[in-house]
Image (cartoon, rainbow, N blue to C red; front, side, top):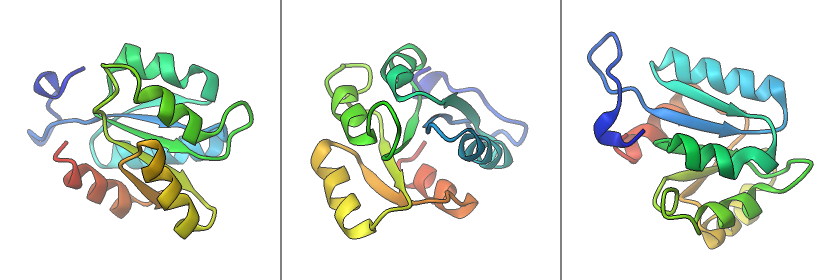
Length: 134
């Protein structure tokens, strides 16, 4: 769904479509709740191997991805997303509980637009949505 086709929520605000990629289902559930609280639509992807296809098929407004996953790390997923024309310009934020100095510079190096510490907070998601004018 492209930005110009976004749905409007109850308050007349645009609803962002956010793809959350994390192999921890509890974390995904928390991220979904945060998106819903803010009036946005969450697409949940619990398997890194499916992330690329879900992103291309759904064309989200924002992608938030964990670094440390079982099958494939978030950095590799970002590199792959940047190679497809449908996702090459989509804002991608890396999420991690790891050391922010190393992880944030690596995130930018592979093509992500930023880095946020885990756990995701309402304030961090709201700020990210505002930053990218979604």
